[in-house]
Structures are given as structure tokens and as C-alpha cells.
Image (cartoon, rainbow, N blue to C red):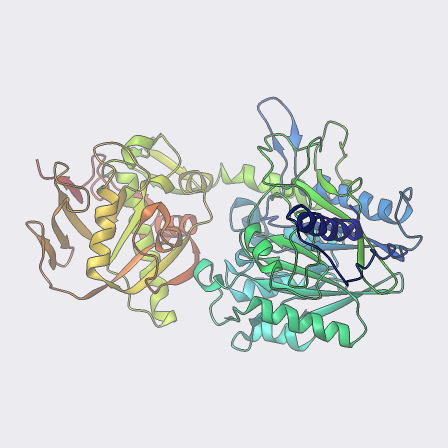
Length: 595
């Protein structure tokens, strides 16, 4: 794709439209398009995003294998070599370079990341990341999921050649991250020197960070365009004439929209949205689904210049390869469509790649063994069957629903004091987040069972001063799908609710009483007994997920996943025993129909 040609076509179309409309161009010399600049430097940007601790490969029902950190590393190393030594195509410069970039969310809590907690070795995710030889990375929201200290630990294990670029976050209130700012590991902008050329990098993280994760004292500047433009101007003043923005804005549409307000930025690499950008005929990974758009997307910036925007699908399943050529003045003159595409990490097909043996031995094998051991690790014993049948947890109280929701309440109460929050007195868990879809027989509960029951990257959140009417509206939302089974159905802790399914949606609560006897609703009418209430639930619901009316309510995300809350509750609060008295199979009357 010749960018000079794209701009030239726009001028011709405008003149043609004026002529067709009967307009005249009198006394004005129409400048002919300038000759395309000579290619001076060809840069390959290898990129990934949202790796999210998916270190192990996936095999489909048809036996096709894709992903996995070992194949990902082997592919990216092959591409790093090919970028410098492969055949030159039309429009490429003699001088070529390569930079490898991550757009954030490099790890994610779950069984594969948990393998590192029980290891005396470096974090497995970092071992794979270092083996891939990333030059630049930025913070994503999930990188704060376990709190700033863990993110700092992860950063501290990176190879010295990797730089974390964060242009809109402030770390003054987080000592572990601030120390890495002071030693130059985290920077507001960065220049990569490649084959004698200077490429400037800017890093932006979503302004919604605090609502998405446990970023705690990290501050966020939301003026993304202003920040990026200021950094680009500073680069220009320093003689750095090639600029790449790496951003983690949760949806590639946000990067495209931002491009319109930017000036002096040549390429945008996005993350956070898991979108697959691909062109017709591009080989894709199994189970790829439909491409979200072409690779690259080509919005225009504030100066009317085309800015290629790219991202890749997540979970070690692709390496993005964007090949661009610059002129001698640093202007972007060519996107090489013949070379630019997402390359799938696969074990079969034209892009098949063998696993990197070192990463397989140091990362994949021990993580596989750890996950297998979870199935043998008993964390509790239940005296009673635990009902997680899909339609049941989505339509009525079950003892597994009670167990999961009690775990949220306990986690919120345990963490609240250290964070200066009012301890929660109630909790709710949507049935759609309980995923084992079966009855767990009385007997042993394994660590793997806790991940099977609560598998998502949902974190415990506390809304310490939720208006009571909002809480009641949330309970109503949980009842809104009845009599059918629906994911928003709310399992309850800390309160009992009686409902009438014959009443209109939004007014089905008949009585709502807290465990301490405080009546919030009586005979369908609010009592006014309390103005606010402290609520524990998952961050997904606090952000308005499943239609809950909590979006806009102040809350704090705790550095505890709902799976971790369940495992801790089983071990510490219940002493490893789920009794039939506390968790009878049919429930204990927390959620009761009026008739």
C-alpha cells in the first residue's frame, strides 16, 4: 500500500467531483503530486497483545493444535531473523530493522499463572516473554490484577533490553513501581535504536484502568491525544522522526477514533480488545472466527495522513507482522501488504512451527504438570452434593451458589479493613459466572474444581456506600429472567429475599431482610431503614455486566479473583469441610418464591 498513492487519489477525486458539479478552476495552478520519496528504511514491527498467561497450547476437537508459549517464541524468533535477512520486495529499502512489541495484558490470574506461585524459578510468563525478546511493552489492565507489587515483580524479572513505556500513568503512590521509574525500567517514552535509526515509542493505557483492575494508587491521565501529541512533538524536537504509539484501550475502535486527533505518529499498535484483523486469504488459527477488519486498518490523523492501526487476537495465538518503509525525512511512504498480516501460531498448515525446545522444557512442561496436579490437590471435603447445574444456578438458590457468594462476602470482609473500606454486609454472584454445569458429588473438592466452578478473570469488588435503592434494583435485575434460567440470576449472601414472579419485572421483590434483621423491603415497599449499604460482588457486575444497574457506583477492586476467594473460603473459613448443615442441597431459604 503506497501511502503517497492514497493521498494522491484523494486529491484527484476532489477535483473530479468539482468538475462534475459544473465548477470551474480558474486562475489556480493545480499542483501535480510529488514523486514518491525514495525508500530509506524498512521496519518490521512484530507485535502481540493480551497474552494473558495462555502458556499451554490448545487442541481442537478435530485434533488441530494452536497457541502455546513454546511455538509462539519459535515463530517470533524466526520472524525476527527473516525481517533482516529475507528477500527484499518492491518498495523496500536496503536498510532494514525489526522491533518486537507487546501491547499489554501479558499475564492473567488463573491456573497457569498460579503455577509460578509454587515455583522457585522466575515467573513462567516472564521466562517466555524474555525468550521472545520483546523490546517494548506497555501496561494493560490485567497487568495490575494482582496488585502493583506483583506487576513490579514481573517487570523486575524482564531482560534488561525490554523497556516498559507508560506515558499516561503515574506511580508516585506505589513504591515498588516508583522505584522502577527511578531506575529507568519504566519510562514515559522510549527511543529504540535499530540499524542506526531512531524509533520513538509512546505508551497509553485505558483511562478506565481503576474500574477494571486493582491499580490502587496508580494515577491515570485521560487526555490521551494531548499526551501522545506532546510526546510526538518532543520526539520531533529531538530529531526522532519515526514514532509508534502502543496503546491498550480495550477496543480497537478506540485506537481508530484516537487517530483522528493525533499528529506526528506513524503507526498505532493496539491491545485489549482481542480483535482479529486479517485480509481475505490470510491463513488463520483454528477456531479463529470472523475477522473484525482488515490488517491494517487505515484511519487518517489530524493532518490527513494515513496511520496504519494494528492489533492481534490474544492468548499466544498470533504474531502480528506489520512491515512499513520510511523515506529519508522519516515520512511513512509504504505499508507492505504482501508481507503484513497476522501469522497464526499453529502446528499444522502453511505456517506450521515446531515448539521452541527451551521454552517447552522451562515453561510449558512444568505448567502442564502443575495444572495436572491441581486435579489431585484436595482443598476441602464436602458432606453434601454441591449443585452447580447450569439452569439451576441461573434460576434458583443452590448450595453451590450459596458457597460461592459466601466466599465473595468473606473475601470482601477480609480485605476491607486494610483498604479503609466499610466491610460488606451482603454479596451477590450472578449464576452465569458459575460454570461447572454439574453436581459435584459429596467428597473431595480439588483445587482444579475451584477453577472449573469459577473460571473467569472476575475479581472481588466492594462498593462500600451503594445506595440501598441501587442494591435493591440489582436484586430485581437478578430476578428479571424468571421463570426462565438467565445468567443474571443472583445467588445471595447476607440477606434473604422473597419474590413474586407474577409481578412486573423490576417490582418482584416482596421482602428483603438482612441477616442482622434489618428490613430493606416489606410487602414490596422500601422501608428506608438504610440509605447506603456495603456490597461485595464481582467486578463484572459492578461495571454493569449482565445488565446490573451498578455502573457509576463507586467501588474498589480487590487483588483477589473470585476463584481465589472460593479456595480461601474453603480452606480458611470452613476449615476444609463443607457441612450439610451449613449448605443443604436444596438451599436454606435465602431466595424464596412468595407462592
